[in-house]
Amino acid sequence: MDIRALHGRKSRGAGRKGLKAGRRVLRALSDEQFALVLQRSSAGADYSSWRHAKNVRRLLKQLRKDGRPARVIIRKSMKKNVVLDALYPDRSSKWTFSWKRTQERSIDLKNFSFIDNPIETIRILHEIAEAESHCGRLAINFEDEYIQDISPYMVFGLIHSSMLPVVVGGRIRNSLREVIKSVDLDKFLGVHPLGKTPTGAVYPFKLRTRRPSGKSRRDNISFSATSEEKVAEDFTDTINKWLGQLDHPLELNQLGKSNILTLLGEALDNAKRHSDPVTADGSWAIAGFMEARYRDDGTITFVCHLAIISTGATIFESLQRAPEDTQAAIDRYVARHRVSSLASSRQTEESLWTVISLQDGISRIPTSDAGSPGGFGMMMVVEMINALNQSPHPDEKPRLTILSGASCIMVRDEHRMFSKSEGGHRVLAFNAANQLDQPPDDKYVFALPHRFPGTIVALRFYLDPSEIPRSRKKDATDA
Image 1 (cartoon, rainbow, N blue to C red):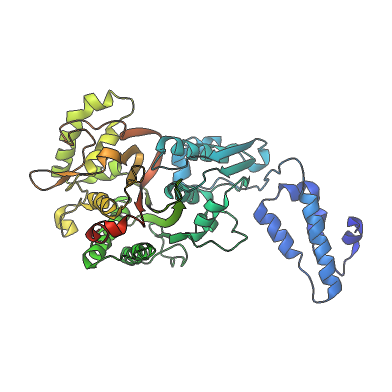
Image 2: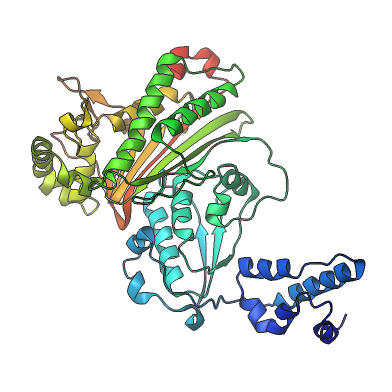
C-alpha cells in the first residue's frame, strides 16, 4: 500500500492528518498522544472503509518506528507538585521547556523500598524528579522481582501526574505489574495493564486517597474514600480476607476488629489533621496487599504490606504547634542528646524530634481539643504488626519505617518491641537499654539525603500457613 495513495483518498481520509504530520512528529508523540491518533483513524461502516483504516493504522505504526528514541516535544509549562519540588529543590530554576530537551536517561528501580533501603530509594526518587526537569526521554526500569514495599510506588504515583510526559519506555516484571494493577496503581503510575488474567496470588487493599485540602469536588470512586472510618472498616474486612486464605482460616475477633478500627481511624485522622495544622484538613493516600510467595525450600508464606502517606507538614513542622507542656518534654529530650547524637553525621535535630513524637502522650493536639488523650497511635501500629505477624523464620519479622521530612526511623530487629515506663506509657527509644535518657542508635534513626514533604508510614508483616495452627490463636486475632 502506497502512502501517497492514502494521502489522496479524501472520501476515506481517516488518519490523513496523522499521515501528513510526518515521521518526525509521529516519533516525538507520547504513547498517550499516539494512541489518540490511532483512535481517530477509526473505521467506517462498510468493509472498504474498515480496510482503509486498518492500512492507515499499520502505516502510522511503521512511521513511528525508529532505531533512535523519540523525544517528547509537547510545549507545556512546568506543573507545580509539592513532592517533586521537595525532592528536587532546584526544579523551578532548572526546568527546561520540552522542545529544548535532548538528553535521554534510564533509571533502575532496584531494591525500591523504604522499609529495607530508605536512603537509596529516596535518592532514586530524587533522580526521577531531577530527570523530569531536563530530560527529553526517560526510561524507568522496574527491576525488583517482588514489591518489597508499596510506599515508594505510591510516591512515584503522586508525582507522575505532574511530570512532563517524558517517561516513554522501560522494563517491568509481570509479577510487579500484577500487584500494581491489583491495588489500582496502574493508572496512577501510567503502567499498561497485563495482557493475561491475574493469577489470583495477590490479595489487594486498593489505593484510596483523600481529596486535597480546600477541594470540594466529589471524590473519585476508584482512588478516594469518603471518610477515615469507612477506610478503616474496609481494611478490617481485608485483614479477615487475608487470614481466611490460610490453610486453617482465622478471623479477627471483636476485640481485634475494634483495635484495628481504632488504629487505622486514628492514623488516617492524624494524617489529615497534622499534615495541614492550620486547617486540619490535609490529604492522605493508603494502599496495601498480601501476596503468596514461595520460599527456597518450596514452602509458602504470605507477605502483607500497608502504607499510609500524607503530604504537607512533616512531624517536626507539625509539632511546632504543640502545647507548651509537650514542647517542654520534646525540648528536654532533644537537649539531652543534641551533642552526642548530632556528632553523628547520620542524625539531625529533626530526627530526634521524630523519635520523641512516637512516644505515648506526645501530640500536637491538646487533650481538651482532642476529647481524649492523643499521641498513642504510632505505638498502636507497632503493637498491631507484632501481634499479627506469624512466622518462625528469622528473616520474616515485622518491619515498620517512618519517614518524615529528611528523617527516617526503622522499627525492626531488636527495636521492634516497646517497653513500658513506670507511668504505663509505651517507650521505643532505639537503644540497647530502650531508655529515653540514652541517645538513639543511628543505624535505626538517621537523616536522609533528600526531603519528603510530609510523612510516610510503611509496614510489612508475614502470615505463615504452616505455623498459625500451632500458634496461640489470640496472637493472630487480638491485634
